Length: 246
View 1 (cartoon, rainbow, N blue to C red):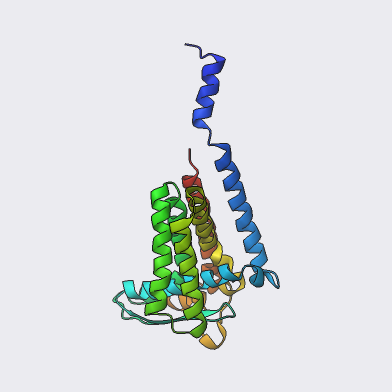
View 2: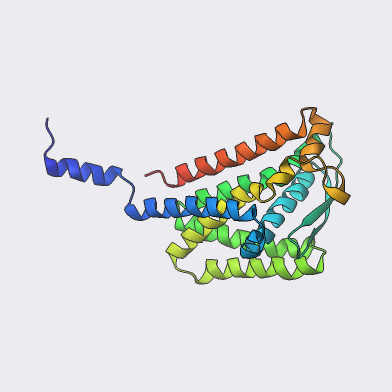
């Protein structure tokens, strides 16, 4: 049976994603690209300072939580005004060399996975609002339990309170946008220190995360750096694809 022009137009309208969604996705992708580029140029960290601190928190909390999941201890988290940070943990893993390698990888890879969860939560207002409350509360919780640097004790609770304020006071559309934006920022935080992914040394801290992975998993650090950079991009693209699926 042949469909009339009106029926065909109705079918297209049902299958096509709303214009607002397409514009929102374009904006998010543009923001992700702009943020990644700004992080690589001098002065970019000052423009994106709150997201630099949040990216550091995502990175270091990833190390600590993975150590806890493997039966170790998350002793303290220090975040400094320069945007750098360090997680101190103890590890007793029955997985042999895989355990320390997982903890090393959790720094760069934990944030993209958390970011994907935030992006996917935007498909439902209830899930988006709840996710914002969980993120804000966990920032406050981490400051209470693990953060031990003076700057971190000010910056992390402040970020947590701002996110909680958005979850409790902002309109639905704003909460949905913020959760997606924060999810994108978490995913691309892997690129915050792109040179670090391809560095063997972490300065006075010793080996970089990728060099730690080389130590325990044999393959060279630059391989792991490239693998995590690509994996982070794939995770971001796939999570946005699912979130914006009509």
